[in-house]
Length: 138
Image (cartoon, rainbow, N blue to C red; front, side, top):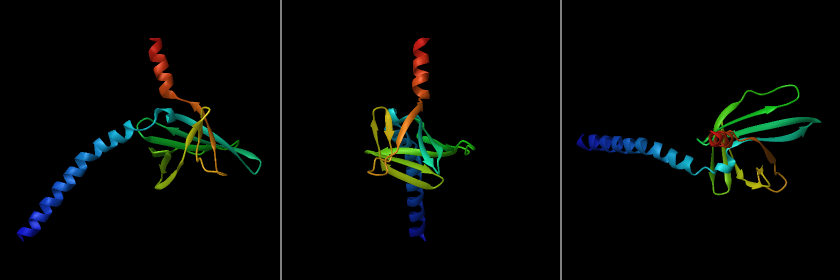
């Protein structure tokens, strides 16, 4: 019985250590997000002769939002998260994870940066940069 109690105490201690470590892990991960990716990005594809705009907002805290817009409709925004590992952009929405190489080219986000699958995303706005510019005016 004593062995069981010791094992439980050990597991409880390990659990507490992991729970205490998670916020520091999150802060370290957020600190490593590349600021040049922060903001609102849009790419347009043509499907059956009609444009489809895919929107993606990458926030400094690691959260992300995406939605699509057509001439007739607009999807509800979906919340998720994002991170970067090396040159790989990782998006997570609704339990689905998409991870592909990315690069920035002449102000555009190229994602995925895979031959014959490249998508070029234009920056719509970067709220963080606007906030900094207005703060400089004050």
